[in-house]
Length: 428
Figure 1 (cartoon, rainbow, N blue to C red):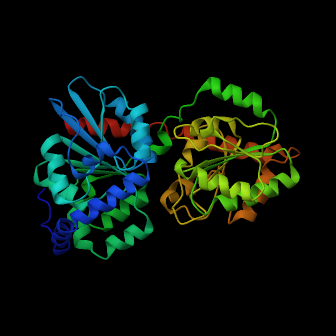
Figure 2 (cartoon, rainbow, N blue to C red; figure 1 turned 180 degrees about the vertical axis):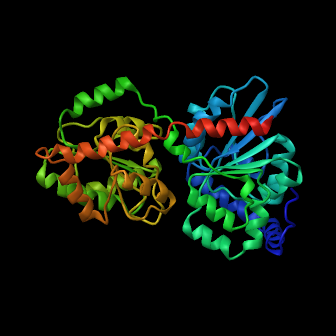
Figure 3 (tube, rainbow, N blue to C red; figure 1 turned 90 degrees about the vertical axis):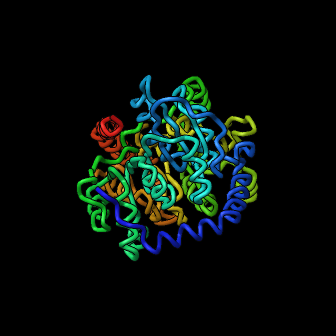
């Protein structure tokens, strides 16, 4: 099927991306340095490869950050074949750090090129992928169009678009149709997304609902010996985790924990910031509020005297989920869009979340229908929920959320395998 011609909007985007490339590169460098990315590899963002291309066939899979990377990690294992090379790109340094520890042997990692014509051209000239796979909502016009111009088939995996994204694309329907029509296959998380993409002009023949791959991902890893040591140290104290907090949420979490401590003075909060480099600022805030705390990045462990454990490290989220019966998934009290609730569900955690979770609306809607999560409106509401769920006189409240979360995830196990079969068939 011949794709639709480029629209004036796409031509204008390409021209502006060319003109703005120096500014975009400077801004990307500043963000890269602020997030403590490896500056020796920043050239990858401008399309300069830091590794040679292996011979034979190659799949390029682009994920943005930690959540998207983890959703395809098991898929990368299933795609392992002697005559096939895999290239994974990420945008964030946190995802790159995780990739360095968890990618299967032989899989190449690079930082994704900026969506400027020159950076994309250099990237494609070097890597020459036989198949390009974009994950979730990664619709970058130059990458998609330039891959199509070279005859590289592209697929969109685990596709989801927020309501605001759908409205934005709906204002330029011809452009949306031209981009979506350049995919060889689009695999959506839900029938609602499939229908929405079809309404934007994606051909029905390339659309398929395969379910949410994040629900089918393997549990996060953790150090069993460290878990046992921390469990012994914490003992039977009422325990909860505030995971992936963002600027502005630590104050709310602190207020909720104060409510819990009024009923349970020995309660312990494990606070896990989304960006560990904010640890100094968070520690200063909490100490100013009078909390006694220990900090993971300083090598300290929680003691009986401490009320908050600041877990400002990368790659240990699975450890905190393993320890805690109850998790508040943050990024949902500020307009971040929420974070992945399936990760704590794998550990049988009761899940709380705020109202601002547009990026995971389907996940929370599904878990909500299964009575496997509970929404809170603000800090006061979070505090009340903590007191109710950690009430030793009513353990059934906590147990119901935990049991329902485990039950739902068992039904999601076949999604990833279905996607792997489709990719292998397309490559052949």
